[in-house]
Structure formats: C-alpha cells, structure tokens
Image (cartoon, rainbow over all chains, first blue to last red; front, side, top):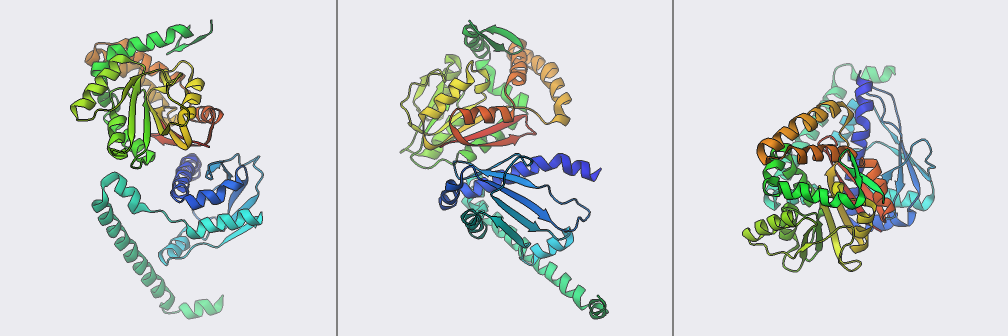
Length: 180
Length: 243
C-alpha cells in the first residue's frame, strides 16, 4: 500500500524538485554558464543505503539542456557521463544528520570536468528563499517569515542535538557500544 | 483544404478562426465572472504564479498574446516600470476592447494591438518575455504560433504558456463530469450561452498534453522547457527558454 502511494507520487515529487533545482541554477548566471558547455550530457543520480520503512528513491536520469539547466531523461536508455551516488541512512538518522547540519556522503564518478562543475553547483548554490518570498508577499513579510523559519530550524536543531546527546549518555550506552 | 478540430468537431481550417471568434464575441462581457465561477477563483492564483515565474525586471519588454481582459498585462506592466513596455494583444476585438477599457479604468495605457499570433507583426528578437494564457488552445496552427513566439523573443528570452492540460488520472472522472455536465449549465445560467462552454470543455480535451506541448515547444526553437503542473494538471504552465 505504502509502496503504491510512493510509486504514484514519485514522478510528481521529482518534477517539482527538478523545477526547484532549475530555479536555483537559473538565479545564478555563473551556474548555468558552467553547465552550458555540457549540454546534451547525462547525469545519473542513484541512492545507496538500508531500505528503512520507506523504499529508497528511484534512480534519476538527468540531461543538461542548451540553457545550462537540467531536464529528466529516460532512466532506462540514458547514457550517463556522470554518476552521483548518495549514501542514504535510514530516515531517523537522516533527520538527525539534517538537524545537526550534516549532509549524507556523496560519491561522484565519470567525466572529470563535468564532475568538477556539478560539485561546484553543490558547494556554491543556495536557494534564496527570502528573495522568492519577497516577490510574492513583499520584502517586509518575507524577511519576518524567514526570521521565524530560521528560529524554528535552529530550535529544532538544538532539540535534536539534545536528544542525541541524551541518548549517547543514557545508562548502559557505553557497554552497548563496547559489545558491538 | 485541410481540416482541424473545433472542440470535438472536424471543421475546415479556414473556418476555425471565425468559429473561435464567435465564441469569444459571445462571452467577452461575462468572461471574468465566468472565470471566477468556473475555477472557483483559482485562475487568479495561477496567474499570480505565472507572473512570479516571469521574474520581470525593470525595463523588460513583454508581449502578451491572447491577452483578452488584461489580467497578465496589468500585472506585467507594474513590474517592468516606465523604462519597460507591455504590448497587450488579442485576435478578438471584443475581448481586446474589454481588456483595454479595463486597463484604462485602472490608469494603464498600454499599446494594444489586434493581431494574429500565427503572424506576429514584430521584428525578430523584440521581447524579453512572451506570454499566452488560455489562448494557444484556440489557435489553428499551434506549431506556427510557437515558432512566431520564438522568433520575436530575444536570445535567452522566456515564453510562458499557461493553458488547460491533462488532469491527473485519479481526478479524470470527476473532472469530466464537471466539464460536460456543470460547465455548460453554468455558461447558460451566467452568460446565456451553453455552447461556448461546451466548446471550452471539448477544446481542453483536444489540446496537447504536457509532454506533447513540451515537445512542440522544443521543435519550435526553445532549447529548454520546464513544465509546472498546477491544480493536479488541470492547468500547466510551460516555460520555454529561447537558446
């Protein structure tokens, strides 16, 4: 049942994430300028990890377009010039990782220049949510909404860190670790 | 002489533009109130989203095709400032007059032009953004119109096509019931014209789905096309970049 829902919703979620990625790339002219020379090349995004209560996301085939943006390719037939593998921990550890400000490990294989440019995107691109919100609701409300959001995120991160510290310091935690 | 579709009917190509004109002549005065009723106000949110995606800057030149009662032209004009320009066009005089009067009432005197999207009277590379909202569906030669839109855009320019599209499969039955049972009655009740709203429902079914329209835009010269499904695919915004 859950797998059916995940299978039905995956294409819609993927297309929304791709729109967001393209929006962020298009907002930074240096980013699309880096991708433009790779027009027509394929990138395969795949996932590795333990299947928890949710199945791992499907492999995603992307292709660079002449505009220096991405579009979905045909996963089965796409030849990948670059393969990006993300190590996904189970959802509870992924959440803990996010709350502590970490990212899952990523392995990149394939064309060196393409890899360098994709890595540059990963390190340098950030979604300017405040700018986008301001276009819809105006500068003042956008700033206040973001300030509230950042406060909530920092509070969650501190709470997550506290829970993790408490879990590590619980009685018997040392002997659990020693017995593994 | 080749034929084309007018809703579910096959008609002579030369006849389609005249029949579409008849539909819009009939509904022009009630167009806005019917849009609000039919979409339960959602068309306003779809247009706000379209304007946000346009991401206009001060000084941009914008061409609004099938601009009708001027919803997009009005929003665009506020964003391009006095250094920019928004050209408000439509092939239907009744719709264009309604839109121009409304814009003037709101203090906006935009260049307004009666023109056919399949033969745009503008030089190559004249505009930063071209938009067509709920208009492409009614054009006889969509490929020719898209090629014209690509021609008048500057390199890197953006085409926004907001149009009814293919609804998500689980909603198909309910959407069909609404389109073929409710819409014509609503049209009869408010605009005194059931046939025009029956045509609306039929023309939506005959319009290319998201993937087909994306392929048509790429063939017309748009190097990149993003598809934004809105309302579970009831409407889709196709954004093409000329490159």
